Amino acid sequence: MTYAIASASPMGSTGTFVSKPSLLSRMAQRPRIVAAMIAAALLPGSAALAQASSDPFTVVETGRSYGSIQEAVNAIGAKRGTIRIAPGVYRQCAVQER
Image (cartoon, rainbow, N blue to C red; front, side, top):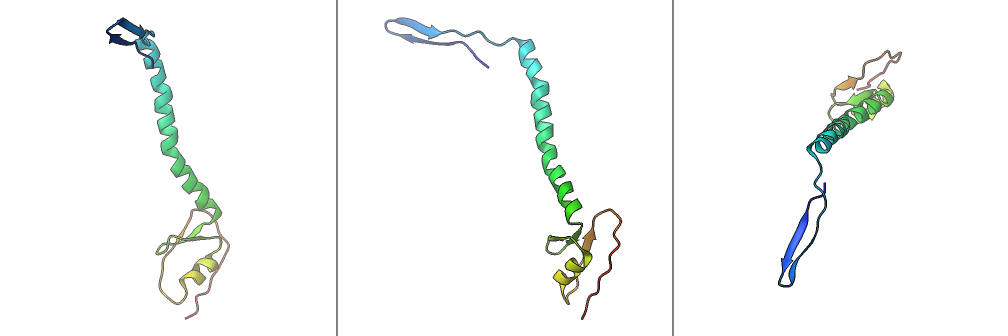
């Protein structure tokens, strides 16, 4: 936005005058600003979805994701843990040795 700028000095007033944007032009910019804010808010969510599809098995206690259920079980080791599995069909099995 541009506005009128003026200053006064002992030698007289000097200044540069630029027209103020109209109300309609300011209102026309609002949808673009709102759209940019919505897009920025959705970016973190879309990144999380992209990560979930590449590594569907997440050890809840550490937050680390793995590509196979066996890798997630191995990460837990002999301890107890929870593995969050992303939606989908997986034809895998895993063994936890104690």
